[in-house]
Image (cartoon, rainbow, N blue to C red; front, side):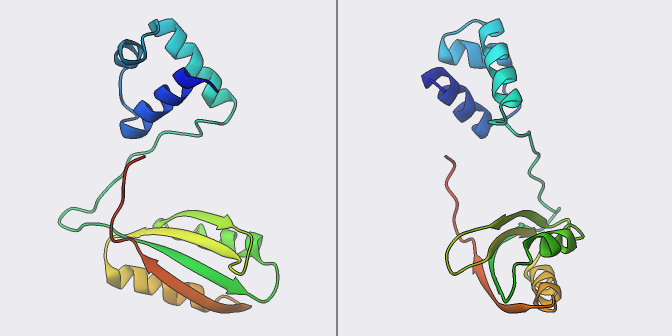
Length: 139
């Protein structure tokens, strides 16, 4: 990945709907070169998808990370169960004391609490910690 790829990725992170022609002007490459680079980045798995960030009307989404600690290795089982929640955006098995990190975007604190309550009932779960997102920065 070179400086052009990094610039293209930065532009797409800011707005995935940016036209290729506009990206080409910003990075000073031809449209075909930018298109080829985007296609290659998608093929290599660097760009894994394009997503719409949706907020519920009248409500700002409540964003939180849940740290899960459990007795046995249950990542696959827990991930399968969590697929039932449309509000769960990402599950990551991580190293260290925490077994899994779960990113949630819920329409309200009440809904986040409901989701957390359901997860707390999973077999083998020892502890769950909630970290509310209070500020974000675009990268």
